[in-house]
Length: 104
Image (cartoon, rainbow, N blue to C red; front, side, top):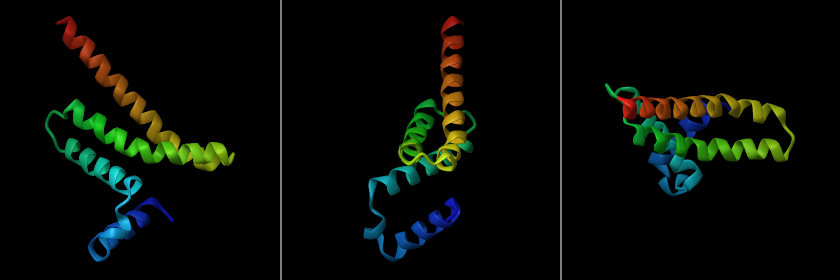
């Protein structure tokens, strides 16, 4: 399944059978996605909200990456790399901004 198909299924089950989707590996990444959408529409995104949302999504993608490493499946590993790279770049960007603000 593609990620958007899984999300559609989770959202449809959320309204029909909420108990079936109440699992930390489902709820936390979904909250992380919603929080990233909130920061997308903010004029000046808050660092804390961005860190928490990256952590929520990173939990799921980290587990997926570990599964790929354990099963030696390079396709799974490669599918998680874009998120990991963008997350590291954005965290380094926030650290760089913090250092510039401290020097001023």
